[in-house]
Image: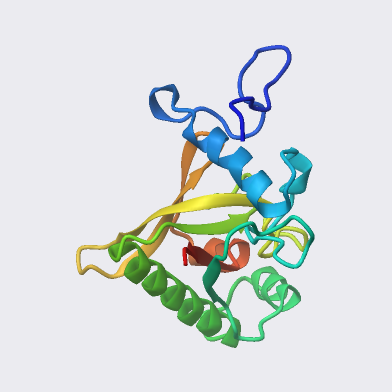
Length: 194
């Protein structure tokens, strides 16, 4: 890998992953390294709309022997069912509400345990992930944009109540709305070195 990064020709600023705090370049450098590692291609299109996995079965992909530890929802709920529940006003006594609460609580607990052990976690979502992002059929657990999981937010009783993501575009994305978390984040994972 070399030090050449994708830049905007008009401004000279990094084109995809943006500068971090104090103009740190590490996210842009890691993004390029990931593109090379994932598919043996230092082209942004090799990671655009990816899900954070390595293309281990592809020629040139997966240069090191990594394993993935992953948490994902396994409740059988579909995006159509959630969108219908939202359209009906998100009734409290609906099975979708129960699945949402159980799923998000399990997700946040898993993330909290992994982060407490020092694990670096990633998730995928739409690039504008937030508590106000539109929930549509095309934003359902869509891993078009990879985000680092920074931390789980807790209340005064140490109960998880939200998650803070670090967007490679240079900002944090806090989510506390359980419906947004359930709909936009399909899970999380960490790469384990051999």
